[in-house]
Length: 407
Image 1: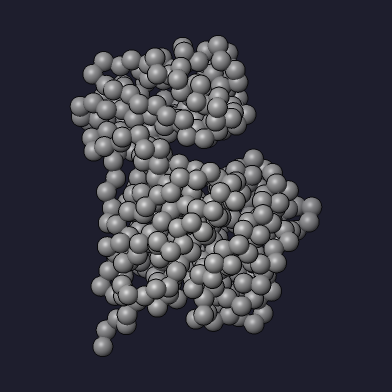
Image 2: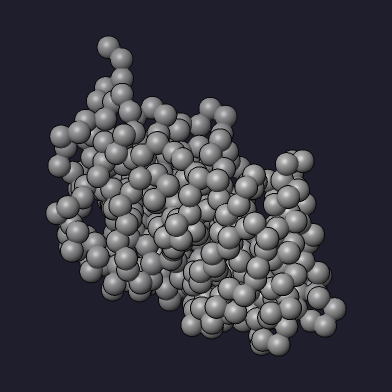
């Protein structure tokens, strides 16, 4: 990330371990949006957000760039950046994060990949990349069917994640994660052929192709999910723990398994919860006295954005605003509200646009003209536009957990 501040590389020698300040990092997945063509307002500008608007008027605000201008991030690298780790230098396959989040017994030497159950037509063309967002119960049933796949000298483990997503772990000799995805990212075309990025990865391509061939045969009579797309090949990742680089005892509260996975990679403890905000708040409340850093993840806003559901995302943001009011009732010394990336409903996808950032603490420097929490308002905030990798340093500073650098 060029000259960007990488929090995890600079805080180890500066953190102060005896602070009692509580930090909450609330990540509203796919937070940022773009103006609706009929109203000229984004989802954030359309929603009624009394708690977030009040915090914006009294807190510090700005925008974050997950990967740098122009680069559209996946959720994994965007979260690594938020946690202060360089996503360009620590690339982790989405499958590895899913396997870790699902507790699949994923280990060094294994290769994991994410599966998307999809719909294909008689010519093998993808007509729906998400198979109508089948329910998790159906996903679980389909995973059971795929357990019949057999590949010589390879052990497979398959587990449902949520809705149309699942994960597979391949265990065998000399496997490699240097394999491209089959997901074409669009409909009306056939899945992409898998390719080896290195010569040694060809054996893994052969394994994955065997899996896909058998999957197509086993799922042929199913509806609407009659095929799988495979993506995000990843080996077992190893990164410095947050306890070591930040001096924090950290807890992840995330209903969606992949986000528990990325939190586990950086050494957070995990609590089981659903994706419902009420469940996540109960988990936060129950663990409030046991930890000093809480990563809380909200997923449904991103799903609504990807579905092009502008009104749905707007309503969900209003639900999150009420959730913020509950968090404030716990009186955290530092509350950071942001997203991992933008998912504008009018684009139906992740995007490269900056993401709003808000910090509430006793040590903020608010801009008097700040009138609300939105993309435009945050763009004029006191923090300006900063890399996502700097957010952890700001959170630590507001918690008075960093000492002075230099004489």
